[in-house]
Length: 214
Image (tube, rainbow, N blue to C red; front, top):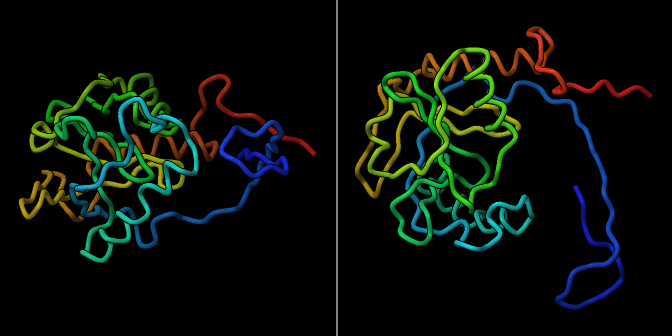
């Protein structure tokens, strides 16, 4: 992470920065197994067109904090944000990208200039194509299409993939065929393959892993 550190008060870019790296051991992200979650379509906007939604900046996470607290209070695990301009296209959640599986096993992920370009999502798309032989597509995804997908997941650093079993659109439910009991078969293969690469049990693509020696 990097932050401006020069001693100045004012609305202007810093001219002195600190770049730091921190590491931490982690256990399983999902206690008790990977269980599908329930999310809702949010009335809040996460990022505006021509804004900074595609930048991994603290302010972009701050924008989602009130909305996620409200979602939790209403019994939902996360928010689905639609595009701020037309509210017809799927963007992302407060801290993860969407990944969908069609009924013919194609991997689809939303494309937008206000979506954070996730390394995990990019890794999963590579794994889907090069390791599992699946067709992948990054394109605009209209909310009207979501009901026709077979599987839905949220992808990010910590969880890799969080399966979504149900989306609540202002009281109307979209239930995915993969169900609420376990992760769908295609997303499960993606999850197991990428985590296998991370843990060293599956050979990684060239350049993915870097050994750091003291």
